[in-house]
Image (tube, rainbow, N blue to C red; front, side, top):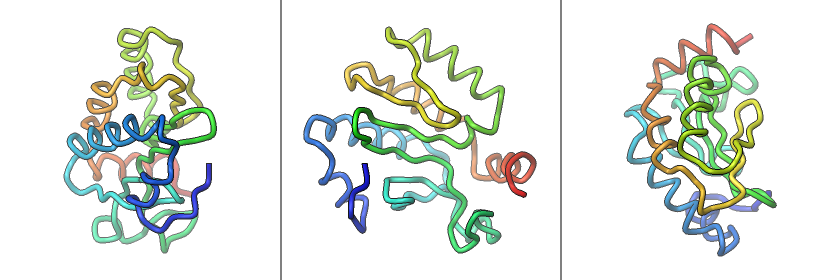
Length: 151
């Protein structure tokens, strides 16, 4: 869902009440586990973590004025979404994530290329998302991005 907000705090206040606690916990887990160097910001209208221009001056190839996006969370119409670009770009990481998700969550994984759709807040594997965050540093993401995505 698109929220007309100008800060992460406004975004978190605008989401439906039934998702607030889950979104706040997910954000907290990410902030506790994401490696130093990533920066939390409002990115594409949702809470996101990016590689700032201070670490990667080239920025995002689609719009070099933007920092390099890495991870975002969003409250969509029918689910919470976690967008992790590292999963999109690294076959080993996606394999690990899919296997771990299956071990830890009783419901089937609902996933797009870089989007994990979480329909039931009671089944969100916060520990798994925390662990996923630790698996890639900003430099790892820059290297993977330049090798596989940047055109």
